[in-house]
Image (cartoon, rainbow, N blue to C red; front, side):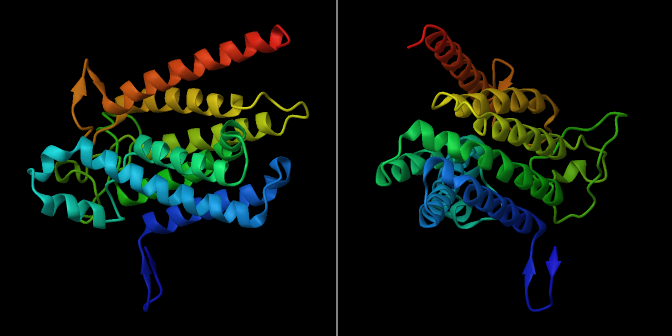
Length: 259
């Protein structure tokens, strides 16, 4: 926690803010390629943040609605909190909706706008997962002899029964994976020969879905129930990866045929 005496900022909030600013300054640095103004990037960052927070919160409530006991008090409490209670895929959907609105407002194609923001999203997410590691949320399962991280602070978000138990640092794994995805997407988007609109976004969806699907097996927090032995995030990852792979294959075929 950042503690200045008169001001305290939890580590999760600090790293989430760092991720947001890193994404914002990245978009400012590369905005010329799609002709976006500084004001346009500021608008995009604001709308994407708002849409991401709202979408992530709503999917969290839908996923864990049973834990609220059917009462509005629990739902309102979850809505008010910015320290926990977000589901990434919900945030992705909310952010995409905000991006669509921004693209229409600025006369930019949605696919081109999505390609512009995909590397920034991976960069922000990488810092956000480091914040999860500091807070103990989205934690791993017991490491079982493998190198692990033990959380001992009773105020952290690790399940109480797992305090002091070495856990897989899945937050760190996902952060490193997102940094690698950012580098790959940036290289793909900055190619001298501009890729077909939407292909960078499809590549992001494919890479992140594969990363998330694998890491879910190492998670030890509440996953909101399983279906066919898979978590909600894994089912979404499979659907998203399949759609992205199909789009990339279709796009490559069209490009090969010169259409």
